[in-house]
Amino acid sequence: MRKEHKNPKGGLTAAGRAYFKRKEGSNLKAPVKSGVNPRRVSFAARFAGMKGPMKDEKGRPTRKALALKAWGFGSVKAARNFARRHKKKD
Image (cartoon, rainbow, N blue to C red; front, side):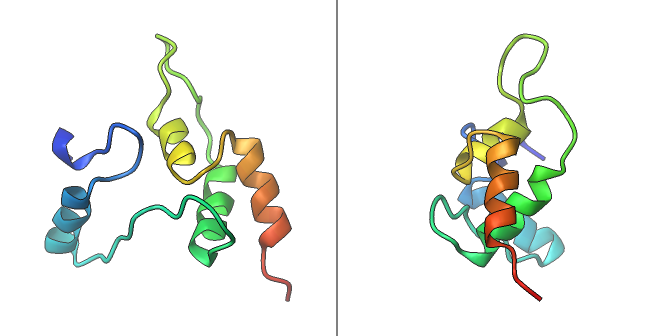
């Protein structure tokens, strides 16, 4: 993926989402930063179990940390707690 497709604040730019739509036919949408949107709950559940550090060896935030922040979560723990509170009841 080229640099112009990555948002420096986390996630993809509009051009990055358009690129994936052309290449793979996917219909990606921008992050939902607040509220109890089902996409946000799903994102929180996926990233809550994601392995890996929040900072690289130079102390900079990783893409994982940036994505969490773009979706309105400050940490993996915050995403996990949000997903647990808002998951669908069977």
